[in-house]
Length: 254
Ligand code: ZN
Ligand code: FE
Image: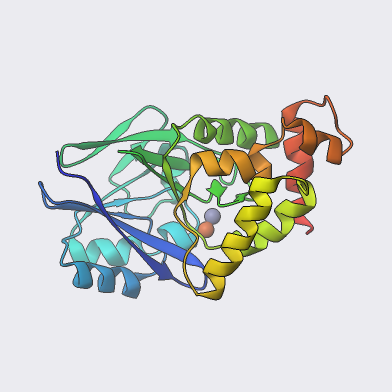
């Protein structure tokens, strides 16, 4: 089976769009629909024909242009069952454990609710399209779910194998880095990464995709059980979910 090709491009002020292409079948999936013109331009540039939209959640910068893109391409739309009523023009609703095919490639659905209640991620061939659940050095704001639900969702992503590429929907990394060092100041891997991020952004290069082992080692939201993080927050021995909630609350007012 030929490897999937992925084309990443900026949308709006800080979103990323992604096209996933299987050359064997000729199928192409667009992850979310943040902005119509850049998606159509990406299709034009790659010469790929869009056959599917895969939505992660219902927010406007993720599903807001579904109808326009469907009208322009005739593609089908797969989205989260937990909020299917809010996904424009949805054809198929999926949830945890379901699979979606792109040619012979299978994407497994993970329910990563918390940012929104029904938020899903698509995991296939060492790539995970995670929307606004996990960010490089950050995680989504918990708008609809509970802290416990969000923490559980992040555990599913943490459990993905080393090497998994994480395609977050936003370029929030520089801001997340500035916050991360306030939570985990003695983490040498984090300090090294913060310098790398600054260099990438100074050169106007993306920090997405990121990689799950790097996130485990440096993302404060995944490190709520770490003894150094807990000690720094004066929460030694606390339940990880409570430490996570404290970190999330601090970030909300950072
Ligand atoms: Zn969102
Ligand atoms: Fe978003």
